[in-house]
Length: 309
Image 1 (tube, rainbow, N blue to C red):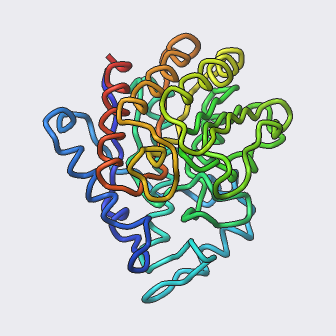
Image 2 (cartoon, one colour):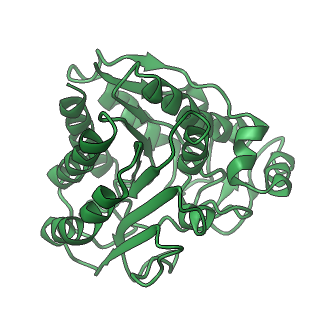
């Protein structure tokens, strides 16, 4: 079995204002990575747009309508100081969410052991009824809630983006079918993610201090995150794969190296191998230095490929 890769041209048509860190160059960089010899042979698919019903599992109907109605005919529309829509943003956001739906179906159906949704915009800051942090729809949440309609009873989401996935936490705060675990820098945007934020016992936060590196992350994973994931015994493991904990990233102050992302991915995959026949769906979140993004993604993909066998 192999790793399914989801890409789509719509990710290039979500255009942010000049100087914005969440820019088209990110997906151009990852297209080049995926064209490298090590990854060019991986199976590819173009994902569908998420349906209104699928989006409304994670978001309030009025919020979905608001995003649809906010689409500009030209230029940009600001949803907040950081989050913008251009004429191509709605399709891109629907397909980024739909990518998680389709990847869940492919992995749950046994067609692939793992999938990587290489799409933008990212999603983990989008709450039930609020866009923020460059995110419109919460892609991983849409996928997790779809998995619950496909026979899964327990979904584990592990988020190693440098910023806390407040949106994913918000959506699953009282839903014990889904575990949300996160390593992230603290203090840092968006200000959530303290260790004491536990939902109904299904939220596991392992904040990391500024300037900590891979050693500190590995200790937090081994002491806090991995035992919690193991105890949850998931039917599917999902990853919010942000690469902005890289030492080169301009938006944060953690000091991870390329290989740290591969180590974290491999350990998360071990949990999947133990409990759910190795089923893993990963989705792109942050990462704003292009060299760091490329290096972290290669390490992540290498670990997924090794896991998929």
